Image (cartoon, rainbow, N blue to C red; front, side, top):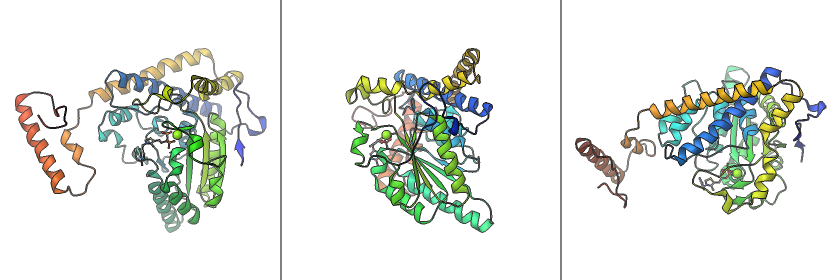
Length: 369
Ligand SMILES: Cc1ncc(C[n+]2csc(CCOP(=O)(O)OP(=O)(O)O)c2C)c(N)n1
Ligand SMILES: [Mg+2]
């Protein structure tokens, strides 16, 4: 199975594989990675302070979060998971939205009408068939209009590959030669389940062959390798040459979510080993060696990242709280009678509560007091 590495841990680049990126593009990728990490750290602290419901950290995965969407055009589609803050940010979705969403308000997932990014999906792998449907639509539309196709970038984790949606989606995409790039962020863990429990195969990428598509494994902490593989896959998809599975071998440095404690199932030595492969440190070393970057620029970027993140927190916290009744809005097209009763009860309770001006909504047993 082909494995691609371009940049080593000392920031040295294989000259034959040097990226086709301009210096300003490399700096932009670095800015996106650093700002995403800063946001990640802030979001975690906000949850600990009781200012955010929960959050799924991306620290350690910035290369596979930033490089794939960086290869897209605005008219292309991105189908993320719940661990996608850096990917969303690269697509231009403000951090404010991400905070509102994780604050428990679905309006945060509503992006601008011309923004072709789907909601975060909490149900593992269910986004894969949706992404394949989008790609099928894009292909039919391109054929009808005799145009080059839009492409779809579909993310999922190592754990998602054990689900039927993965098989159904990739099989369909292979058969119909759809313009889609599957990016598997293999971060070694599916909550507490290690990668070794997901497949007996040595790589996830080799599954591509059984679906009749291109497959490649890349060092997922090497932003140039991720970029090179995804760029080639995007070009193939756009040229009508079908789908690609890109496995990014990376690592989740933090907990699964703020509701997890990763130290209960993995060793400090393992985390330390991966910390040495930090994708941000590696790119910075390269940029310093190539004289694309200086410590003065680093200091400037650091304060800019803080400003971006703090502004997002301020905006998200100033956003009006959702009406609790909206809780019932998005699951059923028509509410069943028993759920309708619950909705009515909540509406009545809220009306009464408003006149009493108290704040408790549910008691300890989960009933309206
Ligand atoms: C259908 C479904 N089953 C189980 C879960 C519980 N669950 C949440 S995250 C997760 C692990 C997913 O691991 P992976 O696909 O590797 O993604 P990662 O969290 O590592 O990014 C599981 C099993 C879920 N959300 N949806
Ligand atoms: Mg995983």
